[in-house]
Amino acid sequence: MAAPTPYKKKPNLYHKKAVQQPVSFWGRLLGLLIFVFFTVLTAGGAWFYSWTQSEQPNPPSHSVLIERGGVNAVAAQLVQQGAIDSAPLFILLARISGQDASIKAGSYALKAPMSPWQILKKLAKGEVDLQMFSMIEGWNWRDLRRALNAHPSLKHDTAAMSDSEILAALGISATSPEGLFFPDSYHIDQGSSDLKLLARAHRLMQEKLDAAWANRQADLPLKSAYDALILASIVEKETGKATDRPMVSGVFVNRLRKGMRLQTDPTVIYGVGEAFKGDITKAHLRMDTAYNTYTRAGLPPTPIAMVGEAALIAATQPSQTKAFYFVAKGDGYSAFSESLEQHNAAVRKYLSNR
Image (cartoon, rainbow, N blue to C red; front, side, top):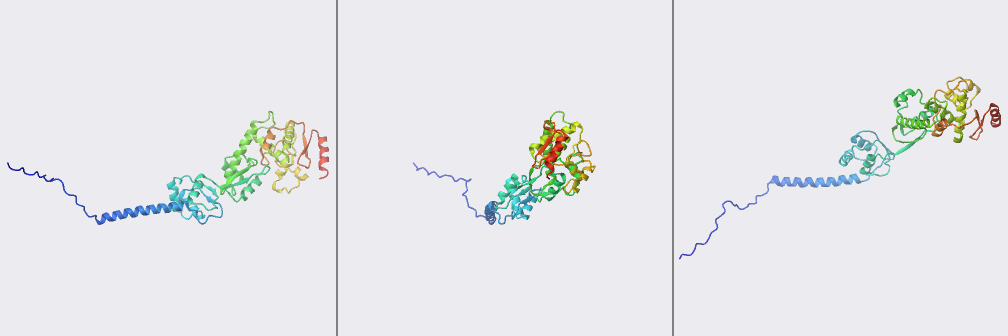
């Protein structure tokens, strides 16, 4: 018997031995370019991050004023004022962080060295460098305008405006701005408009006046809240001590009820205006202006000063008194009298040695 023929595996006609092709020049170049790109990207990202966190070399010696505008304008303002050294990088930082639309206008204290990231966060949060403007009880409108025009941190939008133009811009229908602004200390930021400050002070005055008028005593000889404001301004100017205000208001209310003239010097002085030089005379008392309460009955046509809350409350909640007269004692307080005889005696007592 013949020996079996050994089995031979048939070759796989469909299998070919893998042959490693050499990498082409273009493939090597592409790989190199990708490597260089990611290397540059990583190095650039690290450098950019370092810039965002590094303190700027020359911080400004004063507050930085940021006016309204987009992030491009803000970056340009920061560079111009020395807060940062690169506008494009700051714009990129603001947009990458999503805070480019959150930047708020105002005055910012950046005097200490700060990084661009710290500056951006401060601007986005609106952490402005607030300053103060004080309106003083007893100031008249001329005093207020002078103070507004002289304040170095305000934008003087009202400087070239007339009184009527200011009232129109504020949407106030009154004929005079006198007494329409509440005396207080207001926070302001660098470059803010004096017109906006007046709007704030007017809103606060309206709130205080409305509250006082709503809580007024019954049967006051006052036709409106504006009448109460006029009376409050007279009380404000007539009193040196807050404790006297309700009594002084009570005297004026008694006179209004009786149809007596108020005969108060501050209104006469207001009517004389800037011609008044500090000493009231008989000629002043005889000068028939709209504010001379010696020659005219009733309240003057407008307030004569800015009034505080205590004067508003005194005008709407006067003391219940029988007094019709008062005279300054010289120590800030007043002496009150029910009759003319008592008043004349008080005048001789307290004014004879002046």
